[in-house]
Image 1 (cartoon, one colour):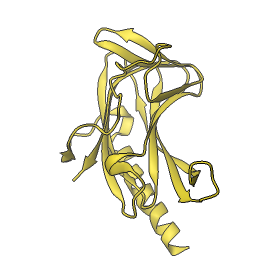
Image 2 (tube, helix red, strand yellow; image 1 turned 90 degrees about the horizontal axis):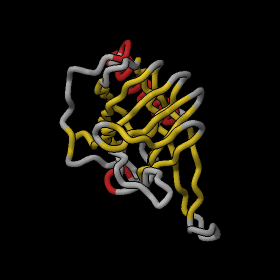
Image 3 (cartoon, helix red, strand yellow; image 1 turned 60 degrees about the vertical axis):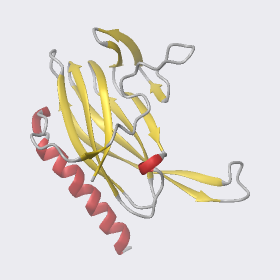
Image 4 (tube, helix red, strand yellow; image 1 turned 90 degrees about the vertical axis):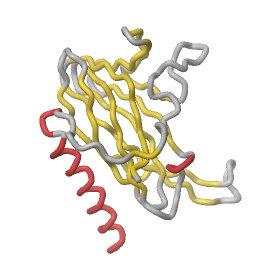
Length: 188
């Protein structure tokens, strides 16, 4: 019970730090030391499948891919539209230790957007089809990030809990949001 409460407090402190640094949708002034390239496979949305959807991303309820001045962008339109990419490889695969990540993205539009971190665990199970059982153990949020017509870059940090891996995505309220240049990096 104490371990669960401690992990919850760590996540709450991490999200609270992001929220206070990002108050009113302003990006942070401090840039954390980031390790290597982005851990997302398609943060620019340029890699598309045969149907024209961004590879590796799940688009739900009003999320779509659109052409922008710089290539492709993610468009979130309407109440409860969202999109996410699962990250279970490299440094963010399920691990017995916590990992701190820094994220950034460019966004514009009307209303606000939140970052959603979808938390998962995989438990070995030889009887299961893939040899494990996957469980969604919750979602943490950062934001809301207030949008303007002019694109802004937003930044934040999050700590991935021990024995978990994540999906990283965006959730939108009424209005339209355009998102591009998404990056998730490990902090040293």
